[in-house]
Length: 151
Length: 416
View 1 (cartoon, each protein chain N blue to C red):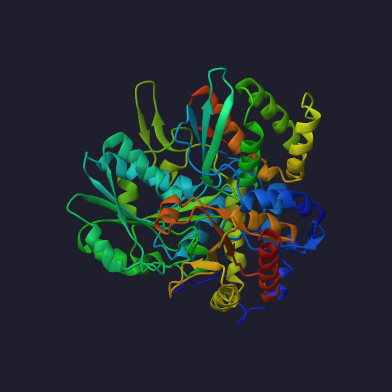
View 2 (cartoon, rainbow over the protein chains, first blue to last red):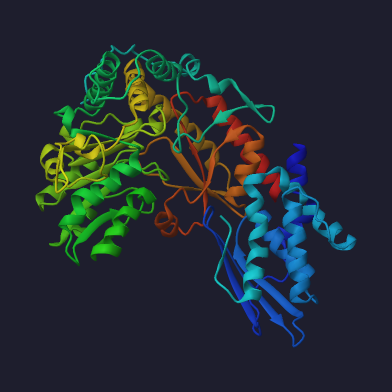
């Protein structure tokens, strides 16, 4: 197989896309956000339950999309449980660098290792938006703002 | 009833010979031979089109209409000759019924703004089919938002076909226009345009046909169709980007208010008032896409050297070959299987998103399109978030179809 494809569709990513974690609605969500990618019509909804210290107690997502967008959402939800809103945004910053092929400086080693599996997408510029949709939506949920869009 | 071609076509058609005219087709992507199957989005350009544009720009170019000098006269002649070529291609009665635009989108916006908007009272209706491209939807939404027009939708059948009778049901006493594709850019469906026009006219309603796909694959005779407006774009017709044409019958064109204001479209301008030129100049404000018009004419002339009926048969064969193989895959759902159908194959893949399919095909050298194809109401109609679309042109081959199908199988094996 083409090396780029092998990196893009790594087993970890395919596993997340086939068996997404935290998939579904969250009854006791304190924050929700909806994201939409008008280029492909993909939609994602993120549910966050924050505790009194602004820490993500629980998280879930719903949506339809490509393997990349589903895997990215699934991995994100896996990584965010137990983190504060601020930490979530810092993680997102590192992730955005990583998918563009840039150095995700400031990421803890452990986080970098987990996220690096998505790094292959930097070879596929047309697909970066697929990977970032869930993250942008998570951020807009935290901010309680308007629907996220990746265009 | 085809318009009389300028050059006598050679009977029969050999795609391998024609391929030599399209230099881009020999290039490789990611080390694989290119199989360009995204023709419904835009077609590649043959050498004679590029040569015509180069020769004109390097030997005869100047601005048109205004100049007294030699080159301006030559350029004007070439530009107006291009109009005549489009007239002949569509078998319009008069060259002044052909307005050059920058593409199909602008042509439809022109009709919406200049023809229909002044005629709309709140509650007046515009009839569209559910398979229209956004370019034949959004200009009418503008009239809904601004003037209270109501959009009425004609559904398609489950196989993607459209019954002319459905137009009757959609037309009411307040219908001001039927605007419908000649051929769907997603389903490939060819609409029964002549019958639609007859039925609409029987109720006094004019018809615009979006021929951006239709003009590429069908012999168009606007007088036989009796359609009021017909829209085409150059870049899908093996011509350049930045040029399209609106055919409009003389009477509605004459009744239309200007679109853009500027040079070229006026009769007289004073400090206090302005009077407008007759069509088509009235709708061609500013310096037009002159080189592109020459390129469009060259594309039409190029098609004129080929046997278009034989091309249509070749494209039908590619479509049948692709459809047959794709339908053998029990994880593929083909969307659009109308009996009357052009060479476009759209499908959903079970458990695999179209963008993942397109990415993997791309690495195999196969260019297809994935997404909603600027036809979201249609995607909704078929309950599809997105589809993969392979669309075939005169230069495609059965071998390319086979590469496409093999790549599709590979996508499945990688992703599931």
